Image 1 (tube, rainbow, N blue to C red):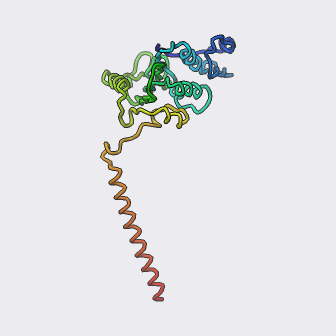
Image 2: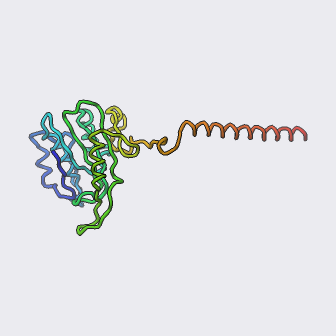
Image 3: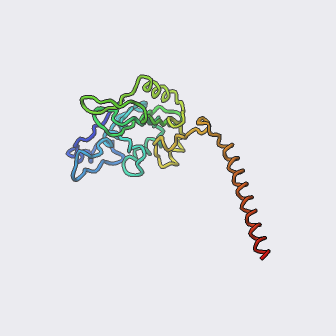
Length: 230
């Protein structure tokens, strides 16, 4: 299943009916109806729970969500992420560039659900810096090149890790980090690849500190001698 829940759509008239859902799809709850701008209701939270409940025991899904969903520290998003991680159904998350979809300028991510998943690892990828901004008739859009599309798909499928781009994390890590699946919280900069040898730099700093301390000690002794001479 692949789905792109609607953005900026008023579904407030449907919420009351969903509160008595006979299928018990909405385990994490239903979004609140905004008092002013009803189009800003987080209806994707409802669609996401519906999609999860609709999957067969061996079902798989790719679902577009606002990127804020992946790290929200409370509410429905946290409950949904916890549900997916605890059941070991979350295969991975890809953060996409802004303006990648025609229907919204909101920064979005794609979450991949796999009920057949057997290991306890989650693939997190930050592709938000890829793409080229172009002006189209319906506004500005970010367009991915064929090479960028290939990199995203091949790295995700092959679970290839690259500093500042992709990382494979343990389920336990996600649990310990408040169930956040924001790639930036796990992707590390490979200092060695940047020509920065951490161990060597530590040795250099220790040497510099030692020299500074020796210099300060000598100055202190000189000051003591001067005071003593007086």
